[in-house]
Image 1 (cartoon, rainbow, N blue to C red):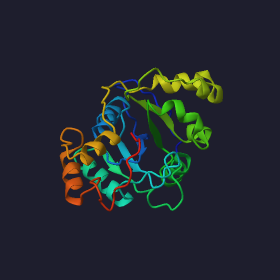
Image 2: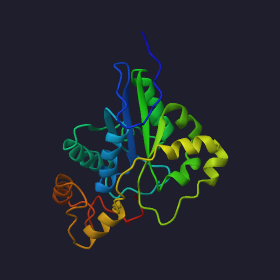
Image 3: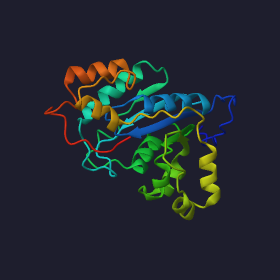
Image 4: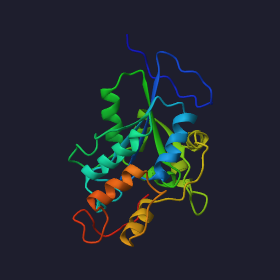
Length: 235
């Protein structure tokens, strides 16, 4: 017998039922993955009571089509190393295995079709990306396929959610904001990590040790590295 997805209630302490599983989805270029991704994601696992969290490295992110300082293979490998130390974290190659650009709606549809209908998908969106959500491809489909929760990220000023409210309606946006994960603001970006590597500086404390060792072993982001190109802004 198939059971419909259970609506997400994010009140801390809410018990699971045997008929429900929650999987968090965190996508990104992860170039490289760093503690600014992992610390808020771990807080999300606890606050949202996620059974597991999928890290989904993008293949050809449509919002940064020219951004590929490290290959998809390296980025997947670094995510795998980071996930090893975090029990509920896993890595999905669902986007890097596709030849077409990475659209969140397509990824969620593929996961929805492949998973038991009792599984609820929770899409984690960084607070800095929330003002751009209305520009995402088929954003209303995204809302029908997953519950959106917000990860805390440092932002220079309060986000302008006017365009998002105009598209989705005030109550829908208020519900998304209500699912903001309480946690520390971790002021680390992939741009900062790469710039330190280009300058020959240590990245200790910015990425997991296993990821730092991998970067060093493969000379990623180093000047003239085969996997390095011009550094561009990314989270």
